[in-house]
Length: 340
Image 1 (cartoon, one colour):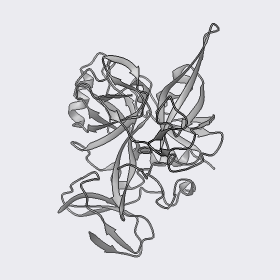
Image 2 (image 1 turned 180 degrees about the horizontal axis):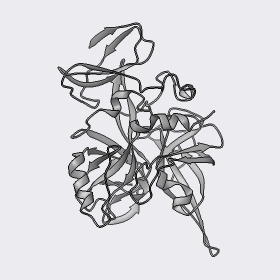
Image 3 (image 1 turned 90 degrees about the horizontal axis):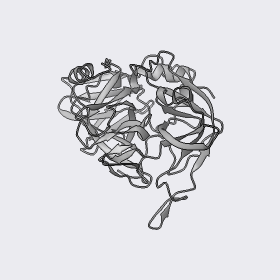
Image 4 (image 1 turned 90 degrees about the vertical axis):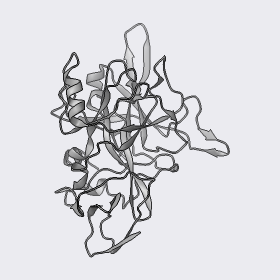
């Protein structure tokens, strides 16, 4: 452990001699930093401390996100090649239900995922917006684990019943481009507040400025969802899947996508991860979180790093990495577009 004392702490620090990342919460006099292999490890060339992103603490909507550190708690410390997650492992996961009505029949399908960020908002991808999907989103499901049971139980432990809440409003990034997938990020405001419990919780947001400067290349992050889990059996998984993916070199990823038919340009606001045959996020996982645990004070908390954006047409059957919207670059936009 390393101890710091200060009168005004709102920094994330990277120490070169100890390969770890830790978060420092505001208004803590004494901080004990846990260096652990169970959290994401990063290196810096020298000791650096970064403040919160400019304007975050003073933003009038900051109070809507600040839960005094009560976020990103996991009870457990369309995914191709994934494994079953544990009950309560990712309590911020949301499933988005759409309705297609062709006059002959009504088709209800969960086609995207999202992430709880507070009691009224879900963060997802802009391409999951009803206008892009060409179908109204009729419900957001929270607390889901096994699709065929409600409530979900593992052994003698049972989660509460799922929560189905209607969406009230969509706010997708005004510069979203449906051809390039640039700025592929969207907020869903729910019609009712979420009832938090041990199995329904918000994830932490990357509010510290350092998140915009971290080089994730080579680091292992996590994705989760109910998308296709086996490229040879194109059915969704009945149990929430989780997969660890390695972040790839940004330039190499950009060159790969420039060589495909639609020649997508990968920007600095996007991350690439995966690229292992048989392992990828897939259609049902669109809009879901790319995440990692960071440690501050005594226990790791999960922070959202990216939003599942796009990949190859045949997901998981290629060495092409998946592409994710990097959330740290959109913190001001998120704050500007939420309300009480």
